[in-house]
Amino acid sequence: MEILELMEPLKCDICGQEDMALLFYIRDTCVQLFRSNHAVRRCFIEVERHLIHNIMEKTQFEAGNITNYSLQMLSLAVVNVSEAALSSAGDSDSIQLEAPQLLPENKSFVPQTWLPVNALRDIKNEERVVGLVSYMEHSQFQFGQKEISSMVLRIELLGERRLNDLNPPITMIFRVSEHTDMDNDSQLLCHYFDEDDWGWKTDGCETVNRNDGGQEHIICHCTHTTPFAVLLVRGPIANIHWKILSYISYIGCGLSAFFTALSLVIYVFRRNQKMDYSIFIHVCLSGALFLLNATFLLTEWGARVKPDWVCVFVAVFMHYSLLCCFTWMAIEALHLYLLLIKVFNTYYKHYLLKLSLAGWGIPGVIVGVSLGVKDFKQFYGVSEMTMADTNQTNAICWITDDSFFYSLNLMYFALIFIFNSGILMAVASSICKMKQVSNRNLKLGPETEGRSWGDSERFSASCRQGLTLMGLTCLMGTSWGLAFLGSGYVNYPILYLFCILNSTQGLFIFLWICLSVNKQRKRDLEDRMSSTPVRTSGVNSTSRPP
Image 1 (cartoon, rainbow, N blue to C red):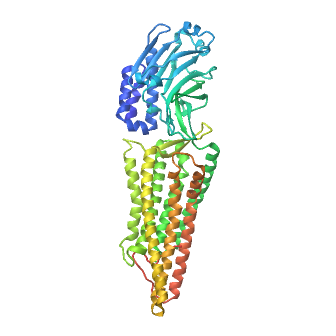
Image 2 (cartoon, rainbow, N blue to C red):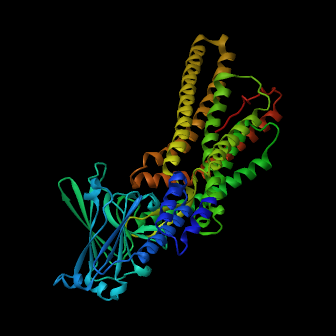
């Protein structure tokens, strides 16, 4: 990637303040790419840390002095801690070091910092140099779903030395604005940024909350030196629930993948020229579900393998399969509308071909456009999820941008759900009218017996078609609607319903197809035994799904 090739040369030994300005210029030029691409952010953080240490090593001053650097989006205070300063601490086990101020209006948000005296005494006088970095903008540290709610503070020691297992620990007091949108499951916690695993973690950090005049004072006690911040954790899934939901999802999706594949086999070996169009549409919906379930089973594997394009491919294919499922839901409704309401006994040329182009093509266009803007913003890749009572993170291949995920998928699903709901109401209205006509003809007597029989047959077929669509809509639409209903907070009943219903969709579609094929076989047998001509139409008006 060209952006990486621009940043890598800045890791040279002679690079300094001017190169730091160039690094921030590169980031500001490609803001969206930095926010969405993990590899670019990792490279940025590595180069930035290297430049900070270069500046620290080049700083010349006497013991006890402080040199401040204003480096555009961050401020660096290089402190040479003298023996006299440590001695002046007296009985205290910590010494306070001032983090640099960025802007006068941000002064109240710069954390107060205390480092343990005993750890500093173990360092030679000439090497006892500490760098404190305050960040004005911290988008490069935005990994995962957690929200950074304070200023990010980085603590570095000369020579890239690390302090670990500190006793007493480093103490920091962060000031954050009070959150008005916090719920009972949300909390402000001290985190450190792990530059090996590239994520925010809490082990080795203790959090103490204190409210003072509308501001949250978060006291952090941490046992090592890294970047620190206070993050708003919005009630992620607990580890035990995550394991149960994972088992349900994987077992259910495995069964669904098997049964949807079986549906395709049944259709291939049982199809004939008189096969209902409805069965073809059910099979296509089943095929979309098969692709979705199969790619879902590969999401965790894809996040662990190299090269990175494997994970991108899995994420893209799963998103495509999801949109295909939504699209074939709409086609189910459209077919019923054409069959029962709009164009009874009307022929459509290449009807199934047109439906197939829409069902498989529209999602392809959407995903293709999303994938085509990767140079501007990468929407697909590794997505991290964290459990509530553990630091364990779970990486999967999926959409990395939450706003893109909810705006596109929610809008697409909402349009289809509204469309299907409209079809359901139209079909219900049509069924009620046919029932009224049927009852009226029965009251008129023998002269309307033949017409009443035809109306009754059409009424019965309409009821079956309406129930089929209603079942598919409830099965597919309602279950996917649970995902959006439960977004933004953890609701375990909704999560369990979502996993159970969606992971078993393939099984229900398989049963539908089996019943449809069985009914088709019985109708073919009746047609061969009867001399009555079969009525046909372009949209197959004799379709009788269960």
